[in-house]
Image (cartoon, rainbow, N blue to C red; front, side, top):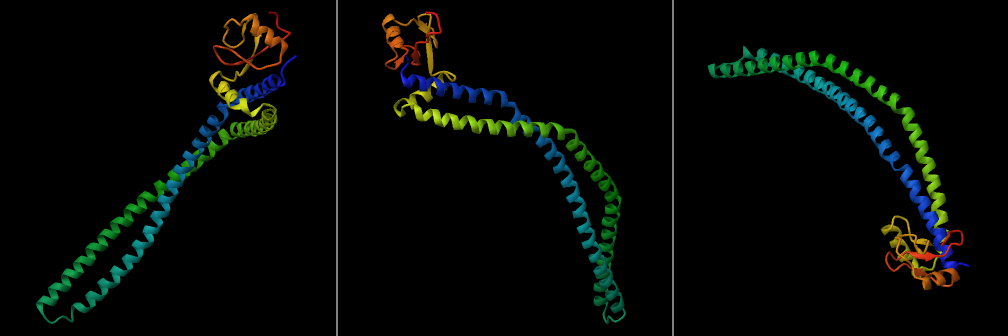
Length: 239
């Protein structure tokens, strides 16, 4: 005969250990899944950065073309008015302004030339990154799908176990639940053990004959003097 509290503890411990075993067998899945998704994200980030660079280059080209037109218009305007100046000082100022506009046109032409040279190379680089990204996704897709399937199955199993755990916890007196949880943490899932061959099934310390008799009657909760786990008598074990 066992104290109902002991029966409840044994059943709760069984469910807790089942949950811990589920976590143990599944622990590598989330890490591997994150690793694979990070590889895809890294490839996508490189591609996005290169695409943004091309977009930026296009925006710059538009601004440069607009500025070139404005500079050319200003230069034409200054040259038209050059013959209308009346003093040497005005003439010199107009010449300086003409030079400044021509210098800016040279800079713009240089920028345009560099952009025209760089853009095809960058476009080629983007295409290579796009292919690389697709290759990475294709290469990892099957493994990711399998891991996500495992994750889904794990979530379902865990939910079922946690429902059973909550039910079993309701059968354990609240006065000892906190102590049980501490034992589970300290002793790797062990909170209640049978007396085995006259000793504690948890730490192996000898159990007194009086304690064994109390355990056999199953009328009270007993804790090991050394490891504090709860003890019970199991008729299926030979003393």
